[in-house]
Image 1 (cartoon, one colour):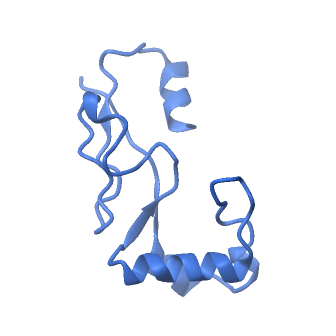
Image 2 (spheres, rainbow, N blue to C red; image 1 turned 90 degrees about the vertical axis):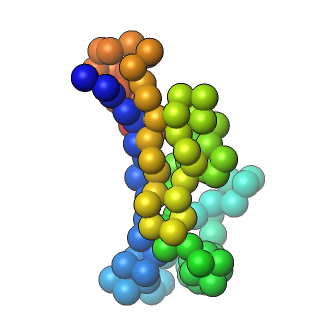
Length: 105
């Protein structure tokens, strides 16, 4: 059996439609220094992603395009709606702790 690791993504339109402002926007994002965005900054960030043509955004710093796991078969994050295509973990330890470590990254 082939094993793959996938990372979660956020459907931007769904979040904007179903979330209450400002309550649900608190603590959503951090900048590169680790500072939390204000609710206004978080909402602006989501709208900038929409205006860039993105339907989904990664929830993990592990996801990007190009992907740092390209050597294991990841084609890179698909912002158009496909999200994380995943990568092979066949060559890694097959115990449960290895799977959990990747899924919590």
